[in-house]
Image (cartoon, rainbow, N blue to C red; front, top):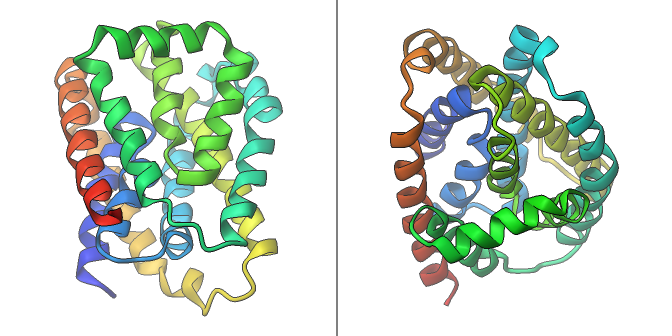
Length: 240
């Protein structure tokens, strides 16, 4: 068990427990910054992300926007699979890509132009979902675009979280299936990471009862933007 991975898991599990995304969105750049490879990071984070999302789905499954979820299956998942396969089968350094994307998303809270670009993309949902699939397959950061489009629909808090959780869990399931066919050896990592999964689920139970009911969405938006910006700068610096 690695202490740095455990800290990353605990921190990102708290975020995902509240918003439906976080383990992949924040965990991927964190583990890259800590020196772990992209595929190894996926093997650690994907089971954790799915497990937390499943608990959220079970609690509010009747509130999922089924029409939107169907569009995710049609327009996003094929691109997630295709581009993850390309990454898993090559040695592409994606730290710079992730860093630049994080900076762009972070500016959404402070730039009317960036916000306008994202709002325009949301109007073309099918194209937006396809781009989201490409980004998620390449960088594991499609959760930011997913959150943007779902929050833009004006759902209630519970509908927002469970719809995001359903889509995010589906991303992760198809990513695991893709890795099973594209990565020749896992070196037992799935089995060895059960302790991280157990801790993450304990964090979810705590966050659900103690934090979720009191969360301030406006405050989270600012923290989210700052975290993305700092992570983006660090990743860009690491890749140069």
